Length: 462
Ligand SMILES: [Zn+2]
Image (cartoon, rainbow, N blue to C red; front, side):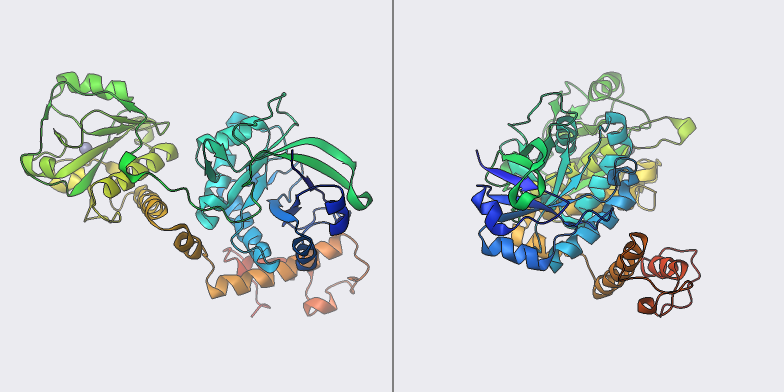
C-alpha cells in the first residue's frame, strides 16, 4: 500500500523520501510552536524540491499543543487559522489546495459539538468545504463527516486523516483517506517521521473538485411521514414561486408535527428538527395549510424549524436547524427553478400576512436571519456552480486583507523568533531595530489593529 510521511523536526531530502518508497508528504503550513520544529512551516524552496522530485504534497495545520488545541478556539480560531493557512499555501505555490486541521488530542463528543465543529464551519466558510480536511481520532473524523464540515470525496469517503492514537483500533479504512499507524520512527535523511497508509487516490495532495450532485434527487430528506389530512391535493393550477419560513414555537420532532396536525387544521411541507434532521410531511406538488391564505399556500412551500428551547429562553433555534433549514430551502430553489435564494423574492416569512410573529428570530431583521440567508445562498452556489468558479470565488481576501495579513505574519515571526531565543534577533530592551524600535507590546497592538480588533489604542502603526 502506498505511504506518505509527516514530520516536524526537519525536512527530509526529496531524494531520500523517494528512495524510501513514499509517494509524498503531509507538510505543516502552520508556524513553529517550539524551536525544534524546523519543518514548520513548509517553505517554497522545499516544496519546489519535493515537486521536482515527483513527490505529492498535502498540507496540515497545527499550531497549538495538547494544552491549547487550535480547534477549542471555536469559530474565531477556525477563521484565523484558515486565512493563515491559505496565505501560506499561496506562498509555497499550493494555492487552492486543501488543508488538514489537526485535532491532536482525545476530543470528546461534547467538546466537538460545543466548540470544535464551529472551528471547522468557520474554516469551511473561509476556504470552501472542499478545501477543509481533519486530522484526529477515528470518531472525530466521523463526526466531521456527519456534520458536513470536511471535504466530500464521494462514495462515503471524506478528507479525513485518522491517527491510531485514541482510535481504539478503528482504522477507518472505508471513510478516511490517510491512516497514521506508525509514530515517531527514524525516516529518510535520519529525520523522525510518522508513516501514513494511503487509502484513496485523492488524499488532499491537490485541489478537490466539488462533487457533482444529482440535482434530480434534491432535496435531501431524512424521513418522510406523509400527512393523511389537513392539506389539499394539487396546487389549484398555480406554480410554486417561493419558500415560507416558520418556527414551531415549540420543540417538535417530525413525528411531533404529524401528531399536532392530526387535530390542528394546519400543515407544512417540511419540518427541521433541533438536530438538523429534515422530515417531509406534505408532497411538494400538494398544498399545505401554513401561510394563512389559499393563494399563498398554493404558491409556496412551507418549512418549519424546531425551537431548541421554550418561551422562557425566548424560543432559540439551534445552529444545526438553521443550517439544515437553509440548505433545504436552497435545494428546493434548485428543484423548482426559483433562482438563488433572495429574501422577499423566493424566500419569505409567515409574518408578512400580519397575523403572526412567526418565524420570530428567523424573520427578516431577526437575529438568525442573516446567518440563515448566508447558509442558503452558499449552499445554492456550491450545488450550482462549476468547481472552478467556486474555487475562484472562495478567494475571500481583499487586497487590504492580504497586505494586512502579510504585515501581521512578519510581526508574529519577529515575536516568535524573539521568544525562541533566535540569536539573530537580539535587540536592546525597549524595542528591536528590525521593528523600528517597537516593543513586544507595540507589536501586539499593531497586530490587533491590523486584524481590526477593537479596544486597542495603537498609535505607532500607520
Ligand atoms: Zn408560521
